[in-house]
Image (cartoon, rainbow over all chains, first blue to last red; front, side, top):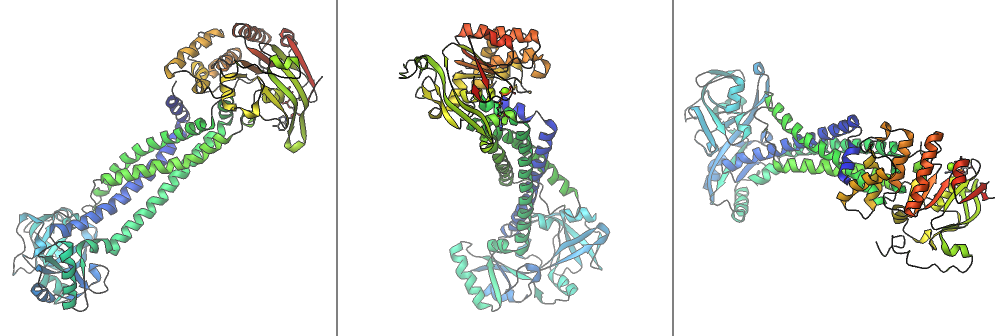
Length: 374
Length: 242
Ligand SMILES: Nc1ncnc2c1ncn2[C@@H]1O[C@H](COP(=O)(O)OP(=O)(O)OP(=O)(O)O)[C@@H](O)[C@H]1O
Ligand SMILES: [Mg+2]
């Protein structure tokens, strides 16, 4: 009989309790993987927008923390284009609308100038893109088109105004697949913000960080009251993303602590029940560290089972989330390997921590007292 | 393992030069002025017990309930520390040697209530002490099988304690006590839970093993038959030898 056989025998001796502990741990690990995975994918997807459109800098009204709350004069874009080092620039106006019939509470609406740099990374699946002169014409992202059940040529009411769907598209960013695109001037009129934009997106002639920083300063100097941020920092600084990350981590940490406490509880119960057995092990010469290894080994066995189960649960959970229409298109069902690894390591690490105290207590037992234990 | 004084070889080659008693010179186990208090001195379980047990001797410790027999056996086996006095194994104070190695390699304990691990089979129970022994991993199971045969239980290898009669359980426990070829076999009322037929069998088995293996055998017992089978009987009362 090997040591591992002994560990597995002990861990499976109470199958229900072991299974419940492993399941509790699995749920905690799955929660970490799903929550952190979603916020991770969210950030990647956000980044993908800027990467695919080759946006290097973003100009918003100074003091705004996210796109939706900023407001700028859209005509500033002409002055930006004149600045040395700027390759291209475009205004963008962003809002959200609801499609109550389809139970979609907050769909992103982009107001873009036809043929602007913002159409990079947008692949037309059906119909055509926006053209100069388009007015009440709309492009639907792939996922949104599915959710709204609209195809090219169909009519669609956006915030009470009738539009014709002229094209559907696929973007490298999941966000845009769930969004719609209108001509900028049309959206400005609908929002009562004629001439306004939420921000300007800028492509530099040279995207190297050394040249980006002086360019950023030149633009800020030329446009007072405008804050210019590198696109990468902009993603990291976005309060919504930061909030999503913080929430994910907070919830995940609580789940993990609960998982570890579950392990602690199970192992404490287990060693308490086996006090006499542990006393016997010490009486036949087992050293303290072998007793410690036995109990830690049992925790590890349960933790490993919980981790495998947790990984599978996370994969199933991610799939299930993408089936809901409101989250569909915003959630990438793939689990980033880094997040999977992190979840498993955290799960195993924390449950070992939960097993450490019971193991230390077992190892510290006095053999005569333990053997007398009723 | 060799630098360990309780190791299998370390002590055998040494001659213990004890100046005082002659018996102490040949004693494998010796207690000097053993005192044991429990509950901060409220209970005086032993009040100055001195004894010497010779190599290969079979000693029975008897006396009324609560007189300190179990306490004495635990001190001799190094399971507990005396409040006063000392225990010497081959002339070395237990306080100065590696007790885990002493338990694993020199002492085999047999308990009244067996203390078998309920989830393990007979063969597995016998292997438990071998983790601290010198045996290669693959050698443990065959060794346990042959020990079970030696204690007269060759057909119950895959049974768990719950599937065995009490007499059979004690045989498994005895085989486990022999797992690492100890020099001492310390048994605390090994027949206390058995009917008289099983008691006779277990007594004969222990006496046999002692001869065959040259064991030093110390048995705490209430049974006159067991006491009569011993070379020497140590009677106790109120924490002292009478
Ligand atoms: N852990 C302990 N704490 C307190 N008192 C103890 C403890 N162990 C033993 N005693 C007391 O010490 C005395 C001697 O106990 P011991 O178990 O050695 O007696 P014994 O001779 O083995 O008795 P029995 O024949 O009933 O087994 C008893 O009065 C007992 O109550
Ligand atoms: Mg007793």
